Length: 189
Image (cartoon, rainbow, N blue to C red; front, side):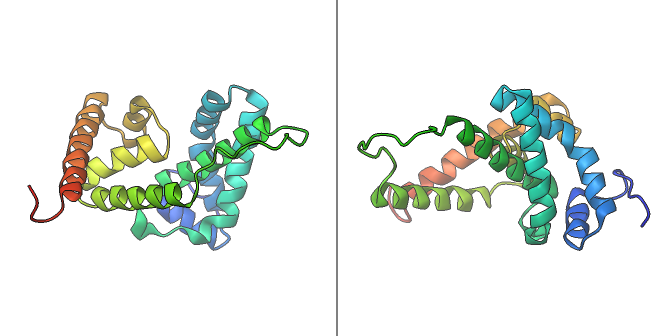
């Protein structure tokens, strides 16, 4: 199988090809994303060994889960960063889990009403995101779902930092307006 150049195809195409078992496409994804994922993991976890484990877990998950990627839901980069974020969270949890059984205490986890409210809020936010322009939605997804800094978003998209800041400000203002409209409901003022 010929080696795939990272510059020849989009992230989404590489993920789809990886889902079909194309090792060259997977290697291209790894070359493209291993360093940024490691940087993100190192910043979040503060430990080089655990960050390396998170990178390994990320790309194991990418290899196993590439068939679940749907290009119509968004570009491949944010999908990979979401996989990475899950691996990083898993590594952070592994560190904070107690080694012995904790004494019985009142649970501080959300109950059914709180989970229902969170689910409703999440649905409203995703619905409002669909109303944004593609460029605004992309910077929001990279920053908030993939955990990238504005500088990293600028580098990833190949656009000036000022443009990222402007798009982020505009997107957040538009989201606030859309969510406020939804809270007011149709016909209420």
